[in-house]
Image 1 (cartoon, rainbow, N blue to C red):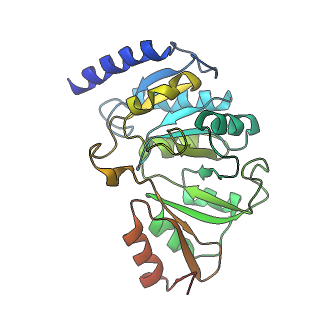
Image 2 (image 1 turned 60 degrees about the vertical axis):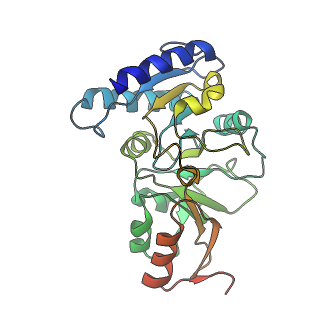
Length: 259
């Protein structure tokens, strides 16, 4: 019943937002809404899950922007190696061009291609996948038009089966940012960023993320800079600050960069 009610609400919202039917092509009025089946790709609807992943991957490959559920808040993704799509994300959000975008990957192993890593692999796996963005030195493999003003890049591997499957289905990293206008609050349901739908190619509805009444659920990932050997710097406290700092200090002996 809850799924049916959600589908009805989405259909009504789509009419108001001018979202169109099938078709991955980007551009105003082209957003297609897809309800993500429960079960993380297993029972009861693995076919529907695979279809959702394939539809999102197709829209991204076509240069589109796709709204996605993550383990923290709703996000908007594009192909990080597609310079035009990256520019579209900045335009969508009204985002300051000097604010960097994170990249999103499906597995820790892929991180080494796009970053220079100076921490133990075990540390990466203690924090990823999870609600943490790790800031590292970028490699030459990464699109030079993505955050050209910095030698660093934030890396996300969300602890969300759809995002991991989608990232694995794409040949390169995704660029990922929150699904909201810059300086506005983060979103926990697709209806909360309904104003963005006409500029999206696809909206993947994974249902509410966390408690929509709780401000803590809107904090986003904890962003930590690990680019300086032996030290760490918290850029954004986010939703996982305490466990992240405990791992860095107590298990690996890293020091706050100010110390």
